[in-house]
Amino acid sequence: MPQTLAKNIDFFVAALSQTYVSALQLDPDGMYAQVGAGVVEKFSDDYVRLKRYDGTTSHYARDITKFQRNQA
Image 1 (tube, one colour):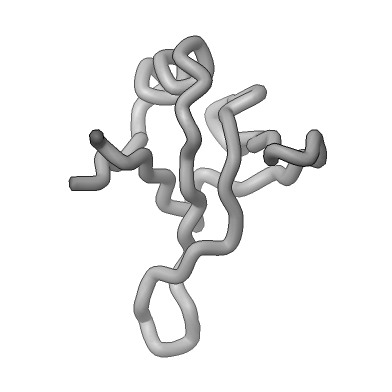
Image 2 (tube, one colour; image 1 turned 90 degrees about the vertical axis):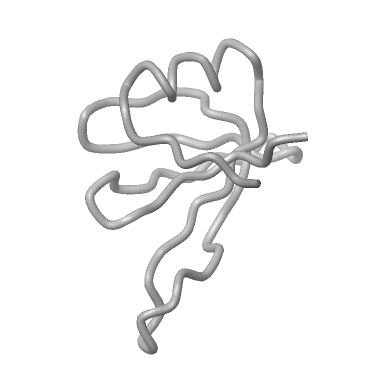
């Protein structure tokens, strides 16, 4: 079952544990679709930076993005 990351402590733990996180945003139909994924490299109250396996990074606004990690 996926776990939603919402609080700073959630992002902090995910960054320390190098957990792979999915970034999801609402599509035009009102459904969440994955727009990115990676390891939390940096975060603030406004943005989260995810680093992908190939080393590239992307920034996602926390107010319009849902972040999830999969539980084993």
